[in-house]
Image 1 (cartoon, helix red, strand yellow):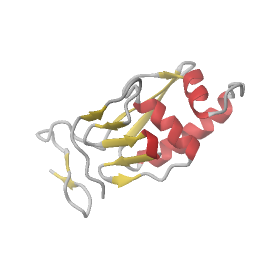
Image 2 (image 1 turned 90 degrees about the vertical axis):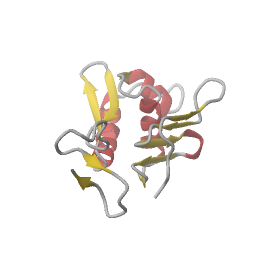
Image 3 (image 1 turned 120 degrees about the vertical axis):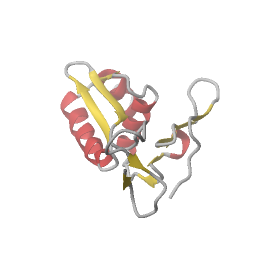
Length: 137
């Protein structure tokens, strides 16, 4: 279990070193991703894709930007390969309630789904804090 600070963003010149909104935590320099305190086991390329998406959370990142971030410089864009990797990432993060959306012919975005309930008053909202898993309200 990993403890995160709500809306903590540690900054340095350029990109931030850590993204942490209390639900999703990404430590860019440590290749570390956790959701609700649970480590996500990602391969290097999968991590690089998630890390690029979280730098613009809830926003679409172009296919070419994702490719340039996760693959060696000069390697030509291969949409089929990118889609395969994004399918793998989607399957891994979906179990934690995160969602990855595909904007056809444009790119992908990552966002909060069932992983966190922004308002606990809504029916079916998920409360956290239990080591045994989420508690339905």
